[in-house]
Length: 467
Image (cartoon, rainbow, N blue to C red; front, side, top):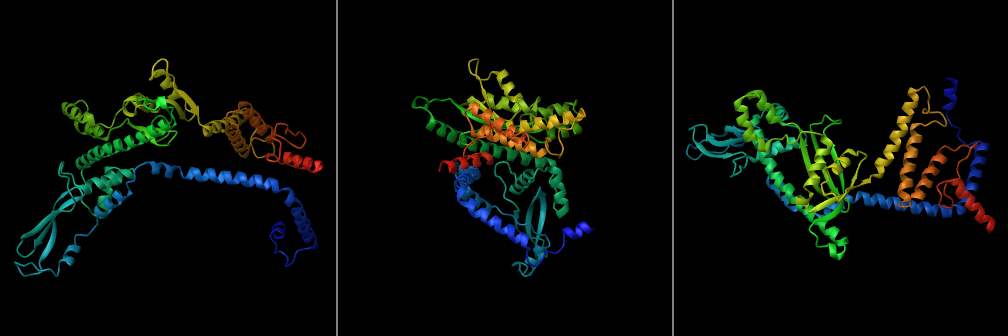
């Protein structure tokens, strides 16, 4: 308790003589070193400005992509203004029409009734309560003239799909606010209609992206290669899945052009079809009714593949790169997973004399270093040897992060000189493990711009001696 009271006691109104003396000495040293550190500060300012510029450029990547694509904001805003909906309680119609007289009856007896529900759309009738005559009627939502599908149903289905929910969540929503729930058949019909609409929209957007990619690559190509039907490009590929591990039922593989950053192609994979599951349960998987139903359902079935989730999408995308895109994905930049790359080599998609090369992602290379160091700490801990922990000189988490960042920076700053990369990597390793009793700074960079303060001070002292 005495220690706590001494530590958190109230400060004196004025500083002591010792504190005043220390403050004056600090200010003198600061003024003395201010001129000497001007060169270093200029160097630091240049580095900071460079980093801020790089950060600004990275932030504007999405804006750059949107500039090359045709703008659709005006048409989208007009569509939103026209197609708007209002949720209204049925009892409010009586209040709205309470003072409106019907000409034939000459009474304020008009009312609105809902006669028939079609999902979230209803047939609204303007009716006279006195003579039971229907004055006018209309549907509460526009209706597609081709397939008779209501727009309100499609838009609500799309809204729930965007938040990752399905028919069950739509039923809960309907019960919560007292609206007639949509049945599964109507939900499936709207789902297929949305798929057809989005499929054509997807094809249009991908065609625009591929046209821009081809144009940008032709600008950099030699005159003899500008008219080639098939162009060779470098792409980035990765897949994302609904959950970790190899048990995911849904996944997507995406191919992105490195030069423009635009998506060239993608493939959605699914091992599960909810309609097939429902039909098997209701009709019986071995029944004749299910066989007849499945023949009609097969072209629209969501289950489109069986096999490894991680390599199937890449196989589909690389196989159709000729037909759909008119391109060859010759160089692929991907993460540390080599299964996809090995599978592409085994398929030999582009022929015997054409080999796909792989580029390593710098962030994943640095991540593998950190993972390897953490695994070593666990491995030696299982043997009874502690090399981690918080004590001085141990391989703690902060040291692993420092080594990872140094490793990434050493590779990035010295591309393509391999020897300088090795020197910088070993310099960061020796510098981190150095102590006052056993200094290891022989590989640290020299000069005024060195990141090691001792080398900067040494260069400054040498310049002062020469003067």
